[in-house]
Length: 191
Image (cartoon, rainbow, N blue to C red; front, side):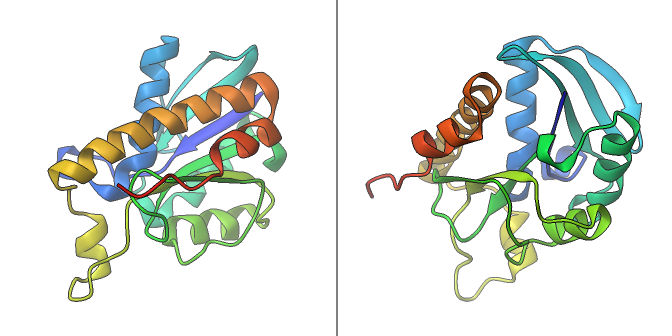
């Protein structure tokens, strides 16, 4: 069984913001695979189903981004999911809008939600799908930037990246992480 967690912030105020890319990918996977909502457990919305022949739990922590580790650690513990079967999907300001990067493990890279997950799990050895949202403009506060919405051209790129991130998760389930890394860890040409 795999636990696939998309990071974001709950509530309509945060919908379609840069910081909610993980939530958006989970919503698309739920829709594509008709995964029923199982309710709320450990301060996270979740549902169980199948993707690519694998049993999965899709979850969205409701604890706000910077406290995502608690719900993920509790859900993983309850369902006996090892870190090797955890996939976390999150936004990344170090990648251009529309870019994806899949990693089997690694540091938090300055992402506070990832820092909390690593601290709560006690390991960096879990897969992550990083979805690019672009670098913060020079005169912007980081929190204001990641909680803002995309302009129209970048929204198109973001929507494409959400679909590609969902495709990448499906490929991971069907053929493994290496296949997804080989396919999606490439730079897209600049427009």
